[in-house]
Image (spheres, rainbow, N blue to C red):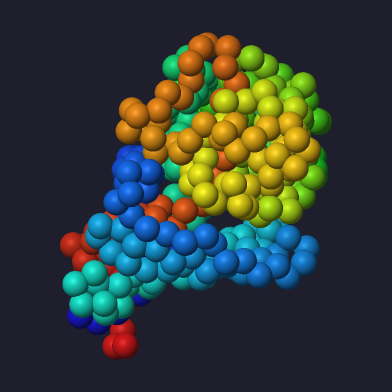
Amino acid sequence: MPLKIIDHETVERLLTYDAAIPLMREAMIALSTGRTQQTLRQIIHMGGGRMFGVMPGATESTVGAKLISVFPDNFASGLSSHQGGVLLFDPATGAPVALLQAGAVTAIRTAAASAAATDVLAREDASVLALLGYGEQALTHARAITRIRPIRKIIVWGRNPDLAAGMAVKLENELHISATSAPSVHVACAGAHIICAVTAAAEPILYGADVALGTHVNLVGAGTAAQREADDTLVVRGRLFADHREGVLKQGGEVLHAIAAGLIGESHVQGEIGEVMAGTLTGRQTAEDVTLYKSLGAIVQDLAAGWFVFQRALELGLGVDANF
């Protein structure tokens, strides 16, 4: 079989949120039940928030890896902040069968995973969404979260007020939901039922005092041990779940900082979100719980999304064949 090359536009066409959210749910359950394998991400830091990462793994359908660069400033100039490829191999022969544009896969699967986590942790009546950040992940998270909760209002905060306001206008026009920008994180989070932190911040922007009882928070933007979007107070307050426990305990900046400060132990990480989804671990216990989902990104998410897109591309005759 020739190598199928699948571009950004084809990934976006085939990997809908209605398909991606249940895919991420199943991928996280499979990870937490030992049916998939992945190693810790290997990351090279290039300064200014720029990174290059390598993520290998294996699922029941395929084996593969993602090679990805992260350049946070790209989105402002119309480029994806994540550039690279997801390479899939045939699990029967070991032959490479597909190369997918990783930026599109990452943008959609990350938000879909947050939506799947939100679906099992947020209150059923959650209807106000705060987005901290105005980049690509803010856009995809709004698209995904509105699939699983009846969102009636979106508030966007970012360091550049004009870009935050522009994202609010874009979301209101696309989703037909009231969307505004806020001058501060505190104002953005006041009254929010769901908060998605999707910034490139190295130091906390979200504080425990900003988050009301009953709120669910997705901590997505800080992807290394040296970064954190939330302060220690919020981490201590929250009932915290990891996408991958080992990864969060070794590379999750918010958790590592709170542990180093002596405020929590490793047991504060309740477990993995896949366990909650599988029904073997309790997520939200009361309406007043503050729940936290710490997302570092798991290669099994990319592989599940990539294999789905690859199979659909074969069915529809999409993608470009290349001899390899």
